[in-house]
Length: 248
Ligand code: SF4
Ligand code: FES
Image 1 (tube, rainbow, N blue to C red):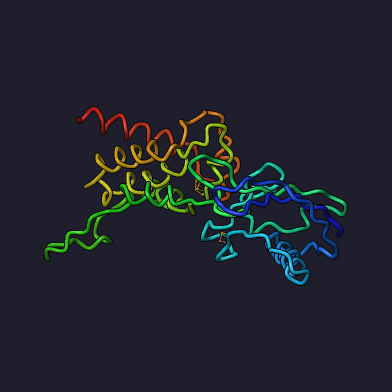
Image 2: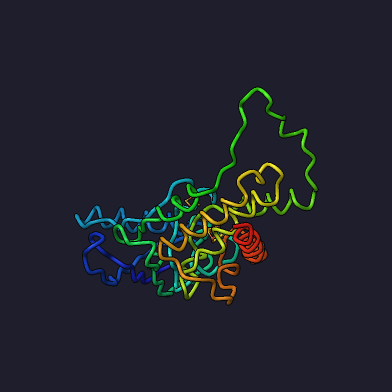
């Protein structure tokens, strides 16, 4: 396949960025999207040009690092996949592909296609944990019965990989889907009840401090989420928040 890539280039966080056009040839359908960018970068390096910086780590849909806006969609046109799981067979010969970083005030561009998603780490640090009593009276977690439905919902929420596609998809750059997944995975389990009241308040407070917008109620986050995190989590977080704040 021959393709035309239009890629956002930005030297650093303070520089003015611009779209740069790169023709690329010999792209095979079985290549992943990131492998296609590797091929482009090899060509650029051989020509003595700066390669395009993009984030990646696991390349198997686990780490959430490969956050690219492809033709206006976070992680590109396929559903329930991350950018590293997207294959070039989803495009056709002659296509023009526009590649940008995730756009949100709370995700500042570091360089080219890399954004700083440290805001997610700080939300997680604000309450995304459970305390463990190590006084010698610790109850084995397996001895606490958990309703199967709750266990399944908690596990589903815990599959959030913190990629940020929900933020990039939302017209308000809201982080409600991410934060609600992190709140839900504990809210549904007995082990998460100890800090439940503070957790939801602290995580929502940090989410607001980071500059994310409120839920736009359009559901774009759920559609673009590579892990299928459900909007039900946002409803659950809202209930948790109401209940926590009414307790004072
Ligand atoms: S909720 Fe989905 S889109 Fe948002 S960070 Fe988690 S996995 Fe990514
Ligand atoms: S590189 Fe880890 S999810 Fe894509």
